[in-house]
View (cartoon, rainbow, N blue to C red):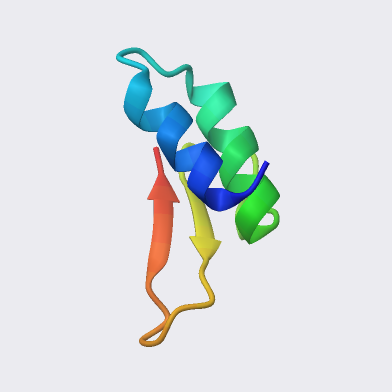
Length: 55
């Protein structure tokens, strides 16, 4: 699965389980910085170093 396929899957679903979203995010961005807390921050490779923060 590439990132475009993952985005299409997420767009087509109305209820996405947190575990599924976390799994997809880990696949493309590696493991979160603080795994095990209520926040899961991920580094991204884009300019400006934006973060993805799943809660």
